[in-house]
Image (cartoon, rainbow, N blue to C red):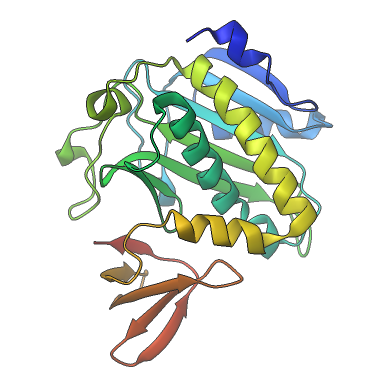
Amino acid sequence: MSSDLARRGWPAGYGRVILDQTDSTNAEAARRAPGLTAPEWILARHQNAARGRRGRPWAMPAGNFAATLVMHPAERPEIVALRSFVAALALHDAFVAVTGRAEPFSVKWPNDVLLNGGKVAGILLESTGQGPRVSHLAIGIGINLAAAPEAAQVEPGATRPVSLIAETGARVTPEEFLDLLAPAYAARETLFTTQGFAPIREAWLQRAARIGEEIVARTTHESIPGTFETVDAMGNLVLNTAKGRRAIPAAEVFF
């Protein structure tokens, strides 16, 4: 794949920064955010303090992808948070562009992309602000392009990690993948800002893993088994449980 050819489609109005090393791209985004007037992608070839959800460490072997899109959104915080679905769809689009195949890929609530049922990518949203305003949003994305962590490195019961190259044979550098992801995200972002969450939700549900199946949602206080029915208009996971239908705003999902 020619990176020069891919970059011809770089979206207008989005910055692009490539770093050899940083602590984490989300931390770098927070440092840069006050001086930005437009969205900016920050990619690092190496991270020495990467993290995932709930502060968990994120392993980053050489050749894997770590980038953050930082922006200053205008919506209320609960609407801003729906960009995790926007990012998941953009990732799905980019994976299809790289491999030419859609069927091995699916999305997992709240913020993972699966390949042949294993986790190939994760999304971490972080924001700052007070009250009804978000001063900046960082959409951190980690992808196992070249290698996946060992099973012992992930939480017991969590989705097994997989890499793009091992599962599909597709070789792509982080820079090349970013040149596909950025325009994919820009297109989904335009849809989100002009038409709202409804078309994003519909597209996400079409790609969702385990709809209609039994799953377990684990919050900080309880484990909730139930049938995965849908995602509602605010992005909540909706389960049919033994105690009735339940909308869950935040949890870890286990299959």
